[in-house]
Length: 82
View 1 (cartoon, rainbow, N blue to C red):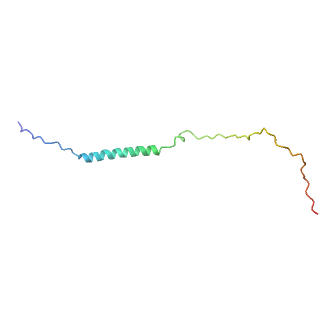
View 2 (view 1 turned 90 degrees about the vertical axis):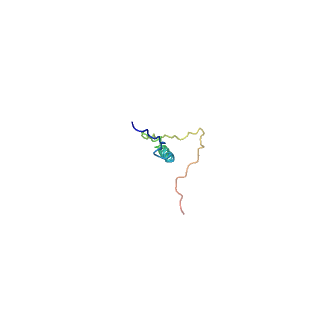
View 3 (view 1 turned 60 degrees about the vertical axis):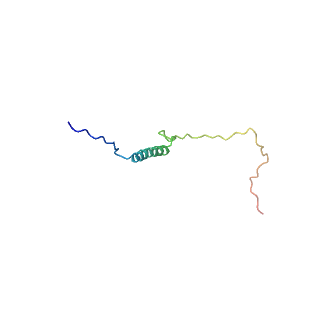
């Protein structure tokens, strides 16, 4: 029979501080990428649908009042020079 082994305390392969820094850095990178993807996303209005323009027809407003008519004849003959 072999002699009993001594019980030694377990030593973690990495320091807890190093592990904490690595985990927090990874989470920071993931959050930064998610924020950049959300901020730089394409505009929802310019999705896959093509932009179609429809002509707008405008009509002049009609007036219910009647403008006064000029009854004097217009002078169409040129003025004579002396």
